[in-house]
Image: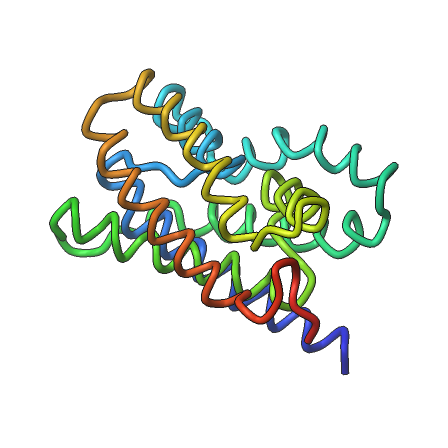
Length: 194
């Protein structure tokens, strides 16, 4: 039953992530933070699939997890692989035209909900979400706030490489990602047990 519940959580979280990214962020070259944001920067600059880039970029963090805490490694590997696959699977999907500011808000809510749902049940998309889990436990800070700090660094890089509009709208996105993730993981400062 536990395995089935975790698979359902990964599926729902991955679908939320994919909808947020493909329907709302990509049409306006908006960014999330962390490894997803770096994967999107690579997509915008080179055309490489974001999910594939996320897998490659996650290798060093998963290597760290393998040595530091194997349960993080095992709990997040399937979440990262499945969510990356779903992101690339839905990459051709586009909604009808929506305003860029509204798109950054709604996209942030979907991405944050996807991340938060998985974190709540001790899985994640890996990448800097996994790093944020380590740091939130170490410093006793809510994981959503830790993700917000890391995301800020990534969108600043994206603003330099892509455009000022990307940076400004992505600031709105990560605020809503952080809020949505925090609401989904609110019970404790770290991960919430199911």
